[in-house]
Length: 484
Image 1: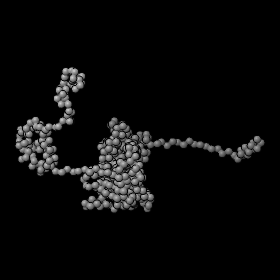
Image 2: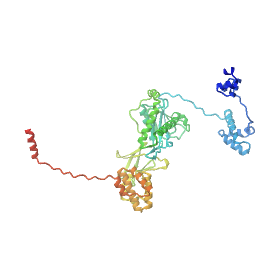
Image 3: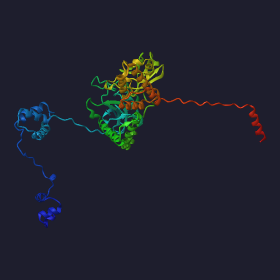
Image 4: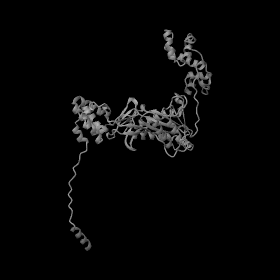
């Protein structure tokens, strides 16, 4: 406007760096658009005026969650040619206005102010979308996730099975001992590991009640189907998985040598996130209750008899055991990640705990059957659980080739020999790579050649002859020493 005093409108606009049209608008009214009162007017007649009260409103009253596109399609079917797709935005605006004026009440979210040391939250989250692999094989797992509501301090623990009490107990106790104290309240959703879920009122399981009593915490849960009520941990799921995903991208690949390496990777990610909450955690740490003198049990006990097939069943899953345990009844302790078998108080067998996910009810170790199959190799052909004995896909594909191109006797003998070589010499992975290469070339494995390549060769010990000198030599040495 100062330039307009001495120049024409076109020149003043050019000096101000605006268009002539904007200069004219500013000259008429110098107020900003946000400072002007907004005027509502229709640029065209309402296309839904004739059917709004008669047809649209009754549909909304009957089903308030109907979408605009659904109503528009129905109107198009009943009134051909009257309501093109270009009227969709108009209908959406009218629906939004109707819901604000006459629609049903919406759920209100109440922000909470958390006190330090008052509440800790536990939950499980699935990690399948991150596509993590262990030695090239997909790693199907989830995370146990614990968060302190006030400070946001968190702990994460890998869980391969389901949301069992053992996983909840182990993860919660690890989190409490790492935090160095206990919150006054522990909150979860309706986990079957913690709640019986048979009635509307809170009904703790006996084991979960004992776990809470051991640490002096009270237990609560959110209303069923209302996951946002555990927002402190639910929202943290997303941010934690995003942090893990970003760290995997920086790492360059998503494969790990073993589960321990993956667990260490997760621990570093969580520690980096916890550094941001260090100040608030120091405040909350002072308000946490003291830990008890020791941890409580994080396992359940069961019993199982080892059958003559060298297998036993626990929680609907078939496991294998060394053949020397056939006929014995074992005391089995089930942890979140493993099961330990005891005989007369002595630990005699330990194995990773399996999950019934994807209807997988067998967890067999081919090493337990090698000795028996060596004596009866032909039994491999019709073995009921034969497919569960292949440690890797390469062995399964090799068996298919052997079965199709050799006699039953030679195929079974070769396959059992390959499994024995993998088990005894600890070359399961490298032997699988060699078998894959042979399959690509269309060749069958030569068991004798593979044994010479992978089995250690016994080195011949040299023959050492030791000549024992006569005792008189010592007399001569003593005499020489005396004269010196």
